[in-house]
Image 1: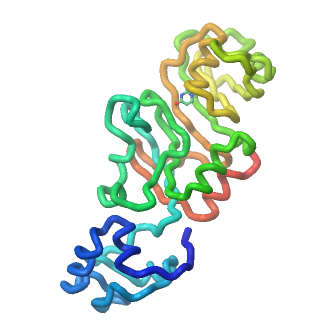
Image 2: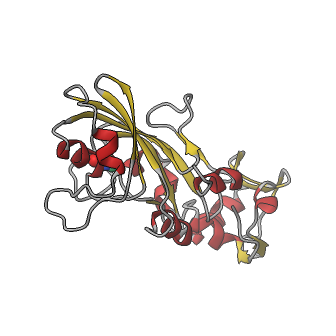
Image 3: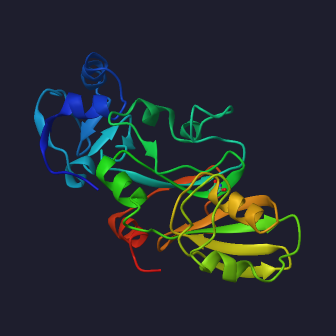
Length: 246
Ligand code: URA
């Protein structure tokens, strides 16, 4: 995505993490920034911060990083965390180093537990982030859960009831869909994002989740060829799919 406002080029590049404005001046002076293949020296000029301009620019021969307003889908591996509150390496380490110096910074769209793998969205677009996590949107999130014990048979009904109360809470869960994938494996689709929700739902029906993997958010599904730890930048149609009817 891009916003076609005009910005100073050194500011744009600094906000993408290419260095301080001083460092960017040096990059330009040494011919490492090119526009249409020719060295661009004047980094104080105002440019259109849009994809058409970005496509003409290279730094060290490489195309420019995505402009602000980026959204990515990451296949979160096990063992990395979405928050400083949990011990362990952060998911942000899986992004290119330079991206960690971006302003605005990317944030995870909601969280997955350290022990949960699968589809995790990250964006620097606050409005998009809030739209996805807004309870009013009721975006469906689907998880494949491997369970410690065989399903007992009534779980789908209990989860769909809209009456299931999680331990320590006073508001029942909204109806959720569950499909058995095997004797002790299920696909669970929820529209809320309560703390450890999937694990606690299975605990509420006397089971225990031993492995949890998120396969989709809204109409956006994790592609089979996106390996754990890999990410892909979403285009506008993929972002729209998040909000598609499921
Ligand atoms: N529910 C959980 O229990 N954990 C997650 O990471 C996501 C949903």
